[in-house]
Length: 418
Picture 1 (cartoon, rainbow, N blue to C red):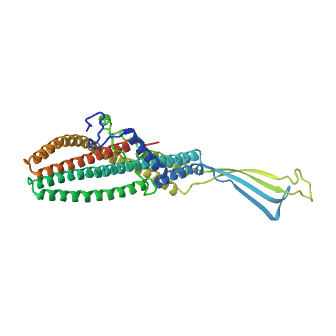
Picture 2 (picture 1 turned 90 degrees about the horizontal axis):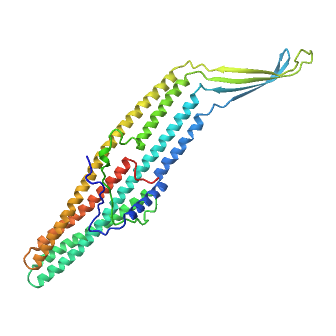
């Protein structure tokens, strides 16, 4: 699938156009607030920081063991009686075990950071989507208020025609019915707007009553870049997929750890004995303290736990591969839907622009005919209703295109603040 135009900027012709730079700055400000304040995002980053603390824990040597013995009844030796004994022992895991543990912990910490990035991208998309909804509601209200003014002018026209005897009073009643409907719709849209503003502020984790500024236009770009995307490589750098890659590497290190854990640990130490001098004799080195180097080796003969740890690491590797494949397929599906939505918004906005222009011309002709007693007022009302519907659909199409562009930014991890 491809987008037809290289760089298309859609705006609502019925609305005043303000600077696009202002829009980007406004939205970036909200994204920055969310990045700093959203508690779910803060929690994800805190978990990443906590994961960083695993590395120095698992990569450290076990604490040395100091044993002290005092003899209640001294043991006699040729050089004298033993008064006390001290033993110091340091165990060392098999070569490379600590390095593998550090690698695994670092990789899992990096995976937690990628989770944070993915959550941030998802939050930014949600904010852009909500922003587009707020825009659509505000512009729909403005559109309906403009239509209410048009209905007021129609009422004046139909009332004037009735007084002159060239029209029926039913035309005035028809306008009043439409006005009542329009007023109710405006009230409902305003209530909906207030509700969405509160929801938007909650995303930013700020006061629900805080003012939300919405620009007068939305902008989205439809580019040909989709044509050159290799579906196998498209999402390679997406943080969710990167997370699974890091987890896979971590589980490979866990497999190495499990294998090395099944090898002997080596202990190096020293034994020191305090010897008192003999008083009944004076042999060579009488009363000299004894120092004895020691070497110990663990015997990992109970193999079940080591085999189970290896199997666990292998199964976790398989799970990481499966999770990555499943998420990649899901991202591909979302990408295809997003491309369709961009194309759809492109085509519909062009269609609505043509139809609004043609309908506006037809509406002028119908009003002119009615003013000259040569037209049906019901047709005037119906045409005005058709134009209102087209303009409302134009707003929705613009919202759809902007949201699709935001989704594309999410899929390719673009368009977000650092």
